Image (spheres, helix red, strand yellow):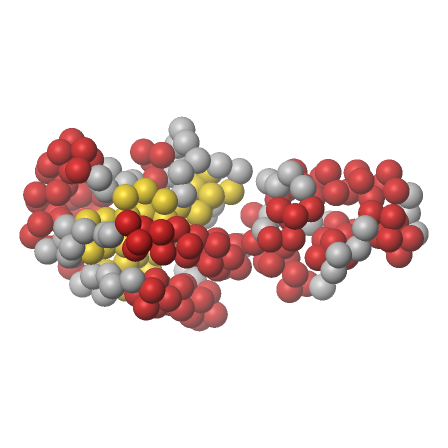
Length: 222
């Protein structure tokens, strides 16, 4: 993934997402970012964070961050909270970065595609998250995913015109037989297209396809 500046529309979507989080739970600050092919965050969008604090983080502390995306290559976690064990194992980060900035707790939302983290949201607090607040953060995941799939470049997922037609019909609830009839192709051809679409979207069935943010992003071309 290349480093790209966000357009005004994309920045507005990101700001709306961060504002939504702030309205759902009390937070001190948050950061949205993309993750490049080396699992390094870039293109940060700040919410409630002084620029100097962010620059200090990038310069001195980002590799010490226990919630850094690079630390989660081997799993499929989508929400991670800084637990007491992490604080104990990463005392330099906690004592030298978090405490001087009046931060007590952190949580990370990871947006994944084919198990690769492609974006994330850091949520910072001056007091510990409650279990109910963690559940609310988890509920925000689909919103963050849809927003991310909309702001990422088209080239990351490319559907052929025929695949886009089929995606559109699947979203309308059409059966495979109905799709074959409408497009004038065989049933086996429709199934082949669907297998290709499932692979590109990293889903395993029609239900996942309909709810997937990949489709929302491509739907603009219909």
